[in-house]
Image 1 (cartoon, rainbow, N blue to C red):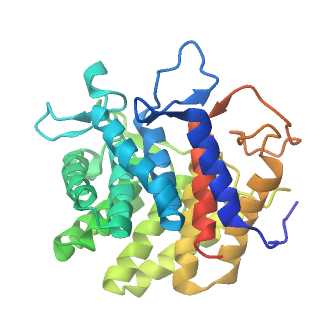
Image 2 (cartoon, rainbow, N blue to C red; image 1 turned 60 degrees about the vertical axis):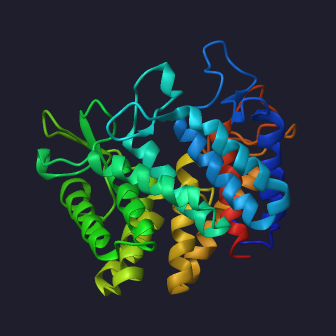
Length: 353
């Protein structure tokens, strides 16, 4: 069904979802989040870095609205994530799990941290967030080389270059361009964007495929919502910094194509799970602020309504799958990723209500 963009209390929904994560998954002593409740036998004790990035972004959104309540968690979580920060490499970065547990770094994991740390700095003016964002960006750009014409690798094994490591990589460069080295960083972003468009954009609709295999040159053509979302944001950020109309037009084109391709029939919501969907909702809202195109806001709100009315368990928490299944009253296992992503989606909507 298509929701009718009813009046929603996004702030209340966001608060409830964030408090659920803190009450259910927060480890007070470790200052970290557990990956799920209840824990499975093979679960790591705390979530991986991708989940940490979403959870930190959730807390940044929460701090914007209720700083006395949530700012202490933001500060403590920073301390807990220091265990993932690997200083034993020429270019320090966050490991996928604790830095002493092995050496497994993802360039996209680190790009998400640049984005959320810049957001945290702009909100709190705590300089440590900006300093760390700069440090992490050094690692991100170390993932670029000329194989297959350029691009940033997905992870340290250097087997593929993915849209999910180049879209957020370009946005990471551009959000830091607001705080220095603007000309140099705009040039870097344009280089990343041009390579990604040439290599991984579907010319038929402007949306983005997943990755290119470095050894074979084969392109894996799955289209995820968040890949197109971050390329949309990259073009929008370039427009904001350079006033290049072509970039604004391209951002709108990606949004229009994603509206046609990614909305699941009968739901009014995007087809992917919350950990992907919240990023396309965010991109729509950022573009709506710039253009005031009403369908962008309407679609973002429809996603929030679908989550609120169809995905919440009666005993608390949100489910992972966004497919059009009958509402489920309860489920024994709920993940940080699904719930922090849904909370963040609500915080994004709260900013425009």
